[in-house]
Image (cartoon, rainbow, N blue to C red; front, side, top):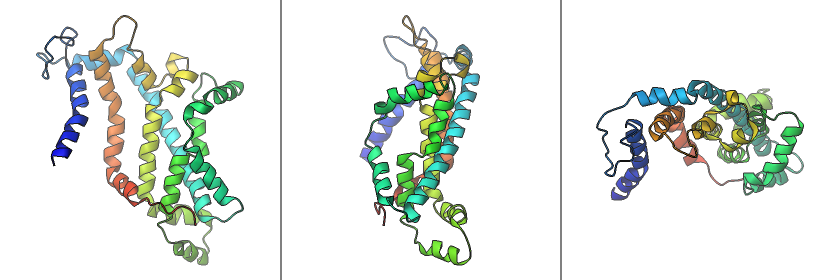
Length: 266
């Protein structure tokens, strides 16, 4: 219990400090004796903080990119995972090994060649580099789905085939509903990754009207001064979508992580 209490305090302390700073006036932020409770509550910081970075425009950009990318990552990872787990074809285990091996490659390895590729395609200063790669499968999510399918007996597939069902019906009408815990887990991870991505929008998107919220929030920092109370107020609103997604799917999220085993391909 003591360990859990210490861990809880360690995790909540930064969040509580963000809330405190967000409600303080500009003159109280750097006081020599930090106060947990502001002397005056400045709720106008939330309004001023959002106005300075065109918050709701960039919020809409981020929501759109995150939703479209999540749909692509979930759908493509499910399709690839089903193919590698349930279908029999030459080189199946080799492809699986390549997927697993790609997890060990840091994303910075392909940063330069991928940038040149997207630039040659005319995708620079567009959202396409942030969205299109999501539709080619994610190795981590594919691996999670494959591992979960290993816990579902193949007798369900065989029974469905005897009733005349094809691969598409077996996947979407039988296996996906049974694998809903891991599907929700993939949705949460995918949305979190798309919502919080910073490097890709920073590299590919120049037009401020196309900025994502993560890039817009970074613009609070300057060489001379940073209005930390406005930044923290906007940052609290920035956290809300991820908190909502997690709390809506936390039941399935815990089931999905707990039920994934290390069966691998058979």
